Amino acid sequence: MRVAVIRFPGSNCDQDAFFAVRDDLGLAADYVWQADTSLAGFDAVFLPGGFSYGDYLRCGAMAARAPIMDEVRRFAREGRPVIGACNGFQVLCESGLLPGALLLNSAQKFICKDVFLRAETKNSIWTQGVNKVLRIPIAHGEGRYVADTDTLNALESEGQVAFRYVTPTDEVTQSANPNGSARNIAGVVNSRGNVLGLMPHPERATRKLLGSDDGLSILNALKLVTSAR
Amino acid sequence: MATVRIYVTLKPSLLDSAGRTVAGSLQSLGYSELTDARIGKLIELQVEPYSEARVREMCDRLLANPVIEDYRIEAISTS
View (spheres, each protein chain N blue to C red):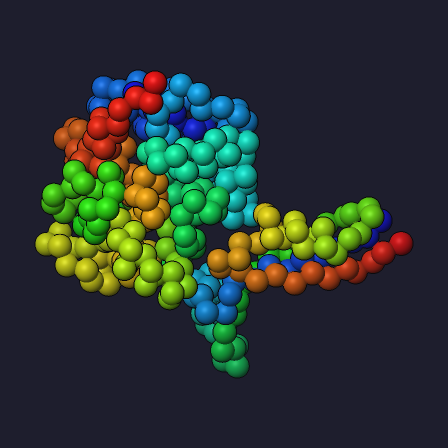
C-alpha cells in the first residue's frame, strides 16, 4: 500500500500529508510531481493543500489540467482512494471529479481556525470510520462551497455530502459555517464514494500534540486499502 | 494578429463577496446611488489567426468555470 502525494508548484501542505501518511498511519508515501504521467506502483492519491499555480485564474484551475491528473482520473474511475484537502478539494472540483466549486469566503477573509465536522454519509470509505463530531483545522480564503440547487439536492439524496460544518454539540447552524458554504457543506464524495474533497485539513490533526488527532478517523481509511499489486 | 478580450463574470445567482465589500466601501465614500457592484475578470489574448470557435474552446476548457462563471468574447482588432 503506497500513497502518492501529488506536488504542484505552490503546494504547501505536501509535507504535512506525507508525514501524516508515513509517520502517523505507518504507510508508504512518495511525492509525485505534477508533470509526471504515471502513478504506477501507487494505490491511493493525496492532493494536498496550498496555492497551486499561485491561485492564478481560479484556485486549482491550472493544477486540475496538469499532466498527472489523467492518472488521478484513472484512479478515480477504477475506484481507488483519492483525497483532496483544501486546495486539493479545489483541484478535484476544477477537474470535474467532484461537483460544485469553491468561492471566496462570504466574509472575504482568510480563515484559520478549528472547525467541527459531522460525517453525513456511510457511503464512502472516507467516512466509515467516523463515529463522533470531529475537530479539525481549516485554513483557506476560498472555501465557500457552491453548486446549483439540483446538484445540491442530488448530493443529499445520493449520500454524497461527506461532511458538514456543525457546532461542537453537533448542530447545523449558520454560526458553525465558517465560510458561507451551501448547506454547511465542508466536503463531498463522488457517486462511488472513493474520491473525497474537503476544505478542512485532516493531515494537520493527526496527534494530540497538534491539538487534535481527529483527522485520523478520516485518514485511517487508507489503512484498509489493500495493495493492488 | 487579433486582440481578443474575454470578460469572465460570476453567475448572477452567486454572491460576489468581494464585489459586495467594494460596494460597501463606495457607499461609505458617499456614493449613495450605488446599489450593487460585481467584480469580474478581463483576459486579453493575442492570437494569429483568430478563430472564434477556438477561443470559445479555450474558455470552456480553462478560462471560465461553467459551474460558477459566464463569459463573453469580444474581438477588438483584427489586422
